[in-house]
Length: 194
Image 1 (tube, rainbow, N blue to C red):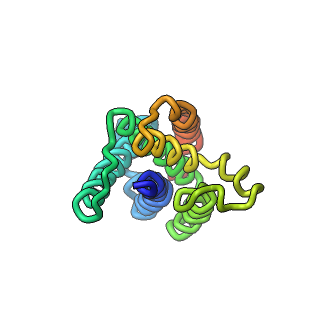
Image 2: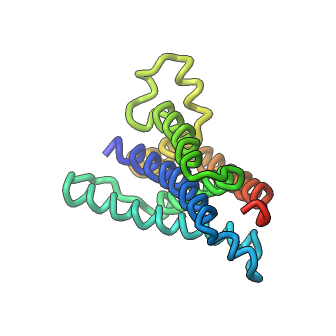
Image 3: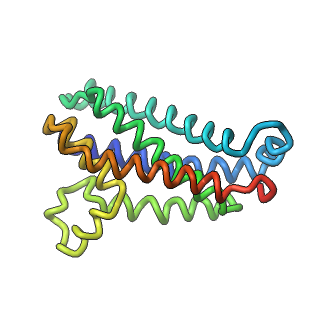
């Protein structure tokens, strides 16, 4: 049960950053985005729609992952309304980071490389797969700057320890990052460059 929040956070982060970045650059390469720019669709609406779609996908796949954990592995942690809200916020946060990256990366292979170069250090330095106490002190300090750390730590407080009040900081960090990166994605993405 202890590791489930870390797996959920890492999965959502990877899905949001790597998944959406490669998808959007593939759309760009195939001319789909260029055709969309010729329609009355506003860039902001398209970006928000992409984030919403990726959030729905990430949430749905998380539900499946938790269900498999219950049925096959006997996981007892049950997401409550606080965990569900946090998972949705995490999906929006990491999808908006992915959209921001896809706003300036033009090549599919480069997008995959950049997405992985961001995602894997965030994942492995966050303490998602092992307790932070096992890491050297300087890495513990670095880990606390990772949004994945705040995500899985808040999820663990809610799902494992049943202390949603201890998840407020993690939730606030993710919500702030979601707003910042959604605004950045809208600002950095240019229809004419797509």
